[in-house]
Length: 180
View 1 (tube, rainbow, N blue to C red):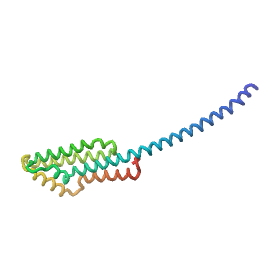
View 2: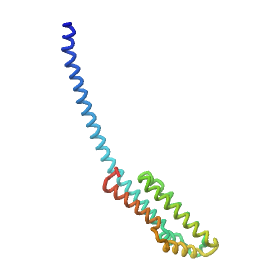
View 3: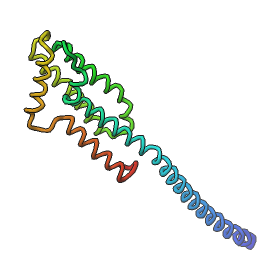
View 4: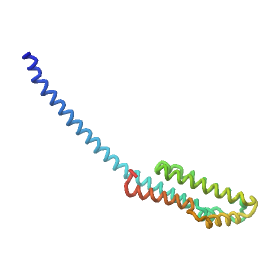
C-alpha cells in the first residue's frame, strides 16, 4: 500500500504538469494558428481585392459596351443589310462576353448571373426586332427599330440594372474587403 502511495505521490503531480503543459501549448498553438491565418487573410486581401475590383470594372465596361447606344455605332457600316447588322451585333456581344468569361471567378454568383442574363436579353432583343424586318432591307431600319425600342421602354434597360448590381457589389467589396 505504501508503494502505491509513493507511486501516486510522483505520478499525480506529473500527470497534472503534463495536462497543464498540454493545455498551455494547445492554446498557444491555436492562437498562433489564428494569428497566421489572419495575417494570410490580410495578405491575400491585398491581392484579391484589386483583382475583384478589376473584374467589376471589366464587367461594367462589357455591360456598357453591349448597350445598343454604344454597340450599334461601333459595328454599323454603310451599305449593311438588316441581316448583316444583326449578325455583327450578335457577334460583337458574344465575342466580348467570351473575352470576359474569366471574370466570373472574381465576382459573386449574383453578379455573374445578372451579366449573363443581360447578355441573353440583349441578344434576344436584337434577334426579335430583326425578325420583324426583311433580312435584305437596309441596316438603318434595324438601327431605327432598336433605338425606338430602347427609347419606348419605360422600365430600366437590362444593362442599367446590371450596372447597378455590379456597382453595389463593388462598393461592398471596397467597404468590407474580401468578406463581401
